[in-house]
Length: 236
Image (cartoon, rainbow, N blue to C red; front, side, top):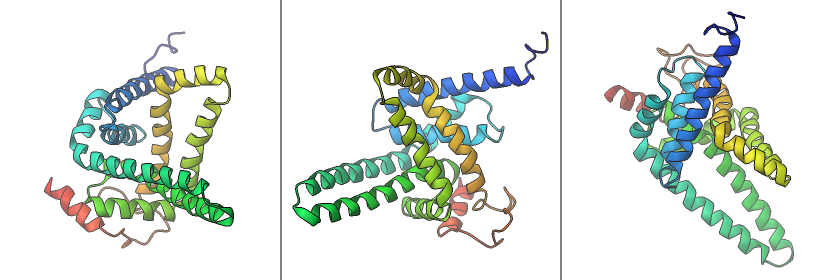
C-alpha cells in the first residue's frame, strides 16, 4: 500500500500528469477567451507539451506564460491570417452552393482541397512556432513542407480531433459529458498526444547540436529558411 502513494510509482506519476494537463487545459481556454489571443495561447500550450513529452518541463504555469509572452506577436499575426482565410473559405463554400449544376460540385471539391491544405498547415504551424524561430513567411512554408513530407502523421493528427469532435456532438449525452471533458483536459490531452508525434517529426529538422539526425535523413538535410531560424535563435 505504501508503494501506491510513492511519488515515483506509476500511478502517482500518471495522476501528476493528469493534474498538469488539467491546469494546462484551463490556462489555454482562459487565454483563448479574448479570441484575438487564441494563437498565442495555443502556441504556449505546445511550448509546454513539447517539453512534457521529453520530460523537460519544470513549472507548468510559468512555462505556459513564458511561451505565451515570447511568441505573442508572431502567433497573433498567424492566428489572424488563419481567421481571415477561414472566413473567406466559409463564404466561398456558401457561395458555391448557389452555383448551378456541375459548377457547384467542381467548386465544392476545389474548396474542399484548399480546406485540407488549410488544416495541414494549421496542425503544424503553432507547434512549429513553439519549437523554432523563423520569420512568418518561412513559418508558413516550412509548416506546409513538413506536413506534406510527413503526410501519414499529418492525417492522423487531423482525423483524431475531428473524430473526437464528431463523437462529442452525436447525442445530447455525449455533448454534455464530452463538453465537460474538453473543458477539463481535452485540448491539453490532444496537444500532449500530438506533441509525441511532433517531437519525432521535428527531430529531423532540428539543429544537429541539439538533436542527432534521425536515421534515414541525410545529415545535410534542412528546410528552406532553417538557417535564418538558427541565426535568429542565436541572436536571442
